[in-house]
Amino acid sequence: MAVEFSEKRRFERVPLALPVKGKCLETLFHSHLFQGETQDVSNEGLCIKVDSSNGFKVGQEVKLKTWLYRDDFLKARGRVCWVHGLPDPDRPINMGVKIIRMQNDALWVERIQNKITEEAILGKDRGQSSGKKAAQPYTTDSPRESLLAADSPRSDTRNLELLLKVSNIFAQSLNIDELLGEVIDQILDVLKRIDRGAILLLNKETGKLREVVSKTRMEDKDGIVSKINYSRTIVKRTI
Image (tube, rainbow, N blue to C red; front, side):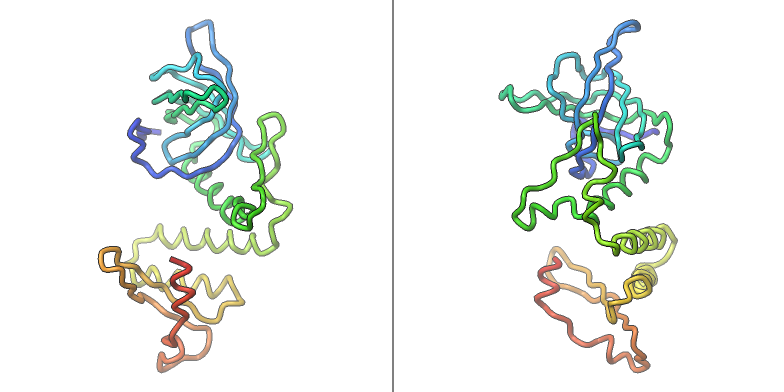
């Protein structure tokens, strides 16, 4: 995988707690074992929380396993790009690892993105938004089958199906109007409870919204129903 995970951290990084085990290849005959947990991930690498920075040096190669589920992990070879030790000994050390090569899965980007999407759908932070204590990340000794999977509603499968269809649409060579029109069609097809939908784009410079596409399930030959005003409150909350 010829990608860069730079010390400047210029790639978008998403918070995601996944258990990690690995070893630093210090010399030909000696290695330093470690285990920790990802703090965030990107398409290019991992930020890992470890107990101690001892044995980690910039440029050092590491082998690691990252668990997505109980019996599903990704094996990778990477390189330490930065090590950040904190003055408080009770707090973990952060270490950035650039992925050099996946040993058993070439679809690192796709699988990590799917995991991030799933975590969002399953409501990983549902406890935080409702004022409850958030679920603790699982450890490498007993990783859970899926974060909050037992609490996820049946509709989550449909939501994943929708996201897959939408991602496939974005992979096609379509102009923006056709593309967003296809997205609305898929939303109406998968989410039967929705009768009407619209996509608005926000101009960050002016702060104004522009409606790009609006569609309805109902027969609307004159295009009147699809242009009914929608709630400004809902739009603001969504933004």
